[in-house]
Every structure is written in C-alpha cells, then in structure tokens.
Image: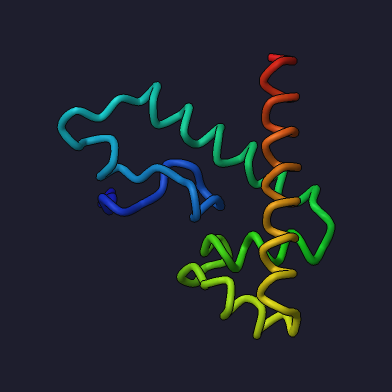
Length: 108
C-alpha cells in the first residue's frame, strides 16, 4: 500500500487535518498539534454561533472561507455596508468570540 505524505490523518477535515508530512517533521509535537486542532474546532464552533452577518464578516476579514483575508474596505464593498460599520461589527463579533472563548475555558 502506498501512502502519500500529504494524506490527512483525520479524513474529511481538510482545513485543519494533520498530514503524515506534519507528523514526520523534526520537532513535531503530537500533543501541540492536537491542541491546535482542538482550538481550531472550538473557534469554528464559536464563529458558527455568531449572527449571519457577523459570521460572514469574520470569515472574510480573516480569510477563513478559503480565500485571502480582506481589508475593511474590501469587506465593506462586498457586504454593501460602510467601512465604519464593518469596523463596529468586527469589534462586536470579536468581543463575542472572546467572551465565548473565555466562558468555555472556565468550564474546562
């Protein structure tokens, strides 16, 4: 059986999955990699809990929807809102994500 170094170790989760190449790298720490994956899943879950407009804004601004991050101006043009409104929505969304993250952390 031939296995690619780029084959994911967690099938179906391409965006945050580890590859065999990752595991074989010098200095690779499986525990750290698993922790990063858990944090990425947790953040995705929190983002999914945002209102639709804020969720879309965060995905666009930080390049989390499979494209490069956009500036506030680019995001404003795409969403057909003002740049200042993008700034306010982004601040509110980040506050909500931070609160959710801290709340989940205190439960663990």
